[in-house]
Image (cartoon, rainbow, N blue to C red):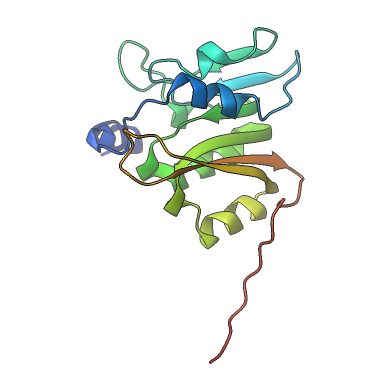
Length: 169
């Protein structure tokens, strides 16, 4: 089974098909300083809540694996300045790996709060990005736990204390 087919078949996971409230999408988008020359990608279009609310002055594109669009993010190979969206929670590592290949300036993703792990912060940092902002959000319809929006920018340091230390034996 190909990666693309495997990803398409796994879209039945309940945590992978959730829709972002408009106010939350706008809040996430507004945390970035986008310019009129920027190309912004909504990598997981869904109902278009991010794409439709990107500023009118940016260039924008989207990916959506579902019909009628059939535009697979994992096959998208054009360079973009920014990605701001809500990716499938079960594919965070794959999403990050592909993001590092195509994004030039940075990205913002909504994740389940427990998905921001030490391993993923190290992955983000080792690929030349820093987490320059984050916010917790509770959406009543989303699983009963908070989500976190992370803002990551290329060639920037983390904007929070991040240390790995072992205490004791």
